[in-house]
Amino acid sequence: MRIFLMKVAMLVFLTGCGLGESVQDVQGSVYDIQEDIEIGVEYEVSDGDLDAHLYVTNHHTEAISFSGAQHIYWIELYENGETMDVDEQLIEGPGVGFTMDSGETIKGHELTNVSLGGGNEYEIGVHFDSLFRIGDNGEELELQFDVMEEIPLESEE
Image (cartoon, rainbow, N blue to C red):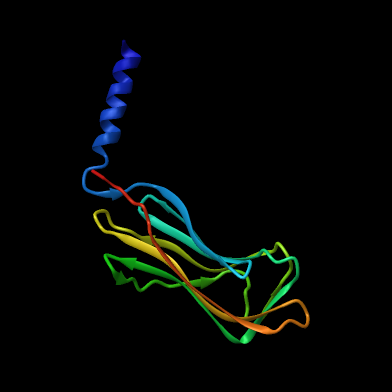
């Protein structure tokens, strides 16, 4: 009986700690595949803070090279339909121009510790615009991604 009462007291304490609105923990990804190239953002929300990173995966059987002449990419984050001003950090490649082997995945920009408030709607996505070449002598092609999805957050009270 004493253990049961301790469990009930702990449950009451834990539910009482969440007074006010906070955001549930969630993990997910937003991505698209074009020309056998996958571009996406993986994200995690924990304790109301968002961490996310952009990634590129080469699904071709050959290496691909991205041009340094045109290479624009970023993570997009919206709160209630408005663009959030957040600082992205470059973690590892891709640089100005880069080559990826078949099956290789590289990470690009990341967002860390972005506070998300309860009761708001958030969307996350990726913008990627680049010229690339398949193999050593392939023609230069353009690749454009604009992918956006809602982060499936539920407020806790």
